[in-house]
Amino acid sequence: RLGATSRTPASYTRLRMATTFSQLQRYGRIYSGGKVAVSADGALLAAACGDSISLVDLATGRLLLSVGAEGDEITAFAIHPSLPELVLAGSSRHLRHVRYSAAAGSSEQVRAWRAHKLPVVDLAFERTGTLAASAGADGAVMVFDVAKGYATHVFRGHDGVVHRVAFSPASSTRLASSGADHSVRLWDLASRECAAVLSAHVGAARALAWSADGATLISGGADQMVNVWDCRAARLTSSRLTSSLAVLEGVEAIAVDPPPRSAERSAEPPKLTFVTAGSGGGLRPGG
Image 1 (cartoon, rainbow, N blue to C red):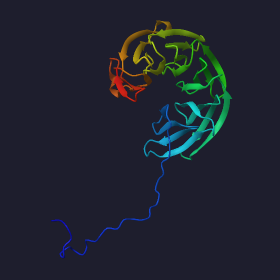
Image 2 (image 1 turned 120 degrees about the horizontal axis):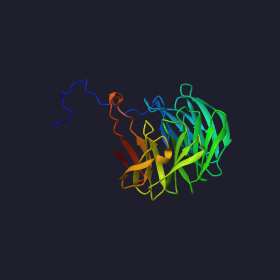
Image 3 (image 1 turned 30 degrees about the vertical axis):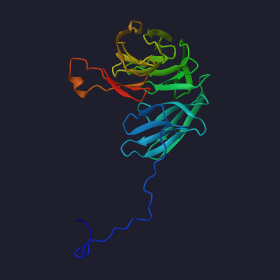
Image 4 (image 1 turned 180 degrees about the horizontal axis):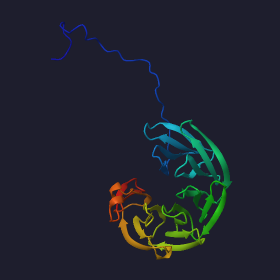
């Protein structure tokens, strides 16, 4: 039988509950939905949160700073591939070029400019960080020189909202976009033309991702399909569909796994694997 007896040692005393507490750390809201991205060094997570972007230390989970413009709801953002910089788009349709210091917990707006006639849906840097592309609800795809704050290209062809833009990791002149018109378009910045229209989806094409070598483009749509496109040819017009995968829910995002280090020493090309994020909240591997 458990319980206190006359033989209970004197060192066994009743524990007293604390009545006062001191706050060690406070965790507020850091994410309100939509896109998330990781900095090039893998140290920071950037996530949209209302009218700001939360920059979170991935090692500690601590919010380092919030970047944005008060009252201007964030609709899209892109994090620079090598520098502590962001490009943000808000409901005001302004694009903002921002520099930040995670160590100091501070940021400064370098410049702001207005771009599309309707809200910006997506933003993406090219591999050097010189250019950024935007996808607009007005059906346009625009490319900007970020340092100078002006448009270098304006592409039209989508019928309806453009959901995603993505530069090829292998070429700063190859840009892909996908839209509500079910199509994926490949744009050649050198010729300033649409080089190819990839048609396989029967619903809005909402997700895009390139393989690390730029040889393969993967698209996902509201039709619950993932399509894999061969883009190895020098001419984008030769791009072709190589496979399709049913994922049983609308595809909202695609992330391509980086190739293993062993692939650098292999004569065979590495197997392409990826993960899709669906409208039902599921994550599904593919490849």
